[in-house]
Amino acid sequence: MGDIHFNRNDILQGAATARGCLKVLPLGKSKTQKIVLGSFNGVLQSFSYKKGELLTSFKTLPTGKPIDAVELGLGQGQKDKIFSTSQQTLRGVNKKGKEFFKFKTNLTERINWFKVHELQLWVCSEFTFNHYVDCKDKNFYLCNDKINEMMAIPIVGDHAHNAVLACNDQMVRVLQGSEVYYEAAVDGAVRTIYHTGSKVAGKHREVFYSTSGGLVGQIFMDAEAVKRGWKIPAEKLAAADSIEAAVDYTKDGRPDLVIGRDDGSVEVYCVNDDGATPTKVFEKSIGEAITSIGSGYVTDSTIEDIVLSTYSGKVLSLSQATADGQSMGTGEEKIASGKAARVLMKDIENLKGLVNTARGRYSQVSEDLVAVDKGTFHVNDKFCLDPHDGSYALTIESPMPIFTIAVQSDVPVELLETEANVAIMSQSPPDPENGNFCLATYRCQETSNRIEIKMRAVEGHFGTVQAFVIPRVAPKTSQICSYRIKPLCLQHRVQKVDEKRPMNELKITGQFSLAELHAWVVFCLPDIPARPPADEVSYCFESVLMGTVLTARCADLD
Image (tube, rainbow, N blue to C red; front, side):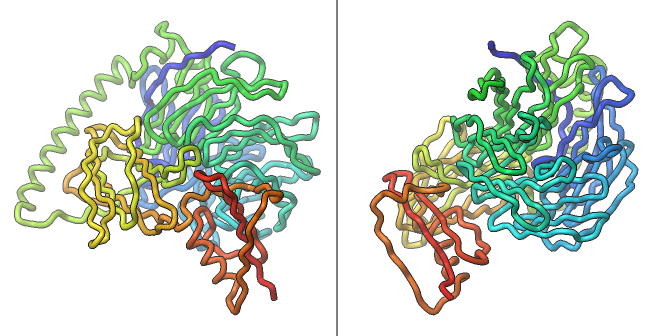
């Protein structure tokens, strides 16, 4: 199977988006499909792209409350119904934007994931799962660790749906009512799960999953057990935040696997029926975190595109259409052509004039004043241990271009050079007496809104690393991001260890509660949930430098 090629088409630049906030509506009377997008500023909009022009079906007013998730209904007659959540409230609108449903839940946490099937509603917050039927409580489950994604598919039976949770404790859990029906362990914190919609051998549901470390795998689920399939090893520390397998781009008779990663990479894999590891046939870097992936007839009525949304709010398509004048695939970085381009250029010139006028007014009223408070801006950040080289990777992304990032640490760390980092670093001498073991600034290029910093910590020392993010806007504002360096910071959490290895054992008993014991473990080791367990729990770790293993068991002996 040879490589395939796609042309990039930029469709829209909106406000910043969260994971799972882009959906492609089914085909209607038009030959192309509409896109639905929810943003951090509370705007929900639907639009299509036809002959180089962006056509808006509807667009709500900004509410200031971020849209956390967008879904299409799963039931008959619901597939073109649009549902979205903001904080604890779920809304439903039709394809014209008219609201037909609103449900304010009794939850205290923000809704991160949900599914709708006829009168059933499955909702997930950070740790909790709720099942509603006709807006009334039906089932509830409290997870041991964070829930990173959720889907609802029939597993135990052919008709009733089961909630399937992707959990941070390296487990995929299938729920039946309020109980765990069974769970499957995988090699890392589960980031994404995706049901292909197909069955294997008449009963197994094919499910793809990804981990925070970058691994992508296949499992088959039925009412009895889980069967494991292929795995795509991680080539880099980049989580796959979006997975889809709905279109056969390689024309081999089976839908291809499309992966969108948080470092901006888009990958297409050819999936084989013989169970062999999929073959990569396409890869491209978008340059910023990909939050959602879809597919459909968006820029061309004869060829299905890959549709992407990015963290900063870009919506773009990757099309296989050729540049024959009848399709949109005419350039690598093409935005539009003809009339649309002229309209855009005119709008840009008008906006430049408005910006210059506003800047002039601001300079007049604030000559002798301190800069006004513009409020905080959202930052997409990640701080995690790379088990391949034993370093910590700090990734910071902003919807707007970054001017400078200052890094300060009260614990000894060594800043490392990275190929992906194009910022200019200036490091000051350490000042341990004032709590500054590391102080450095990274001056970014004019158009950069993403930066990756690598550092190496020393096990046994603990403290805080802070990043001060200053965007390229006026007046200058800053946002602080803090990260904890644990005493046993080079321990990488794994699913299990070889218990046949010679082990030393340290047992601590006394007049303390299970919650206090769990708090000590949280203080010492990374990747431990802050919420204490209800009963006995065990955590396994492996040193990224020495290869030694550590098992921590917490139990209430009473």
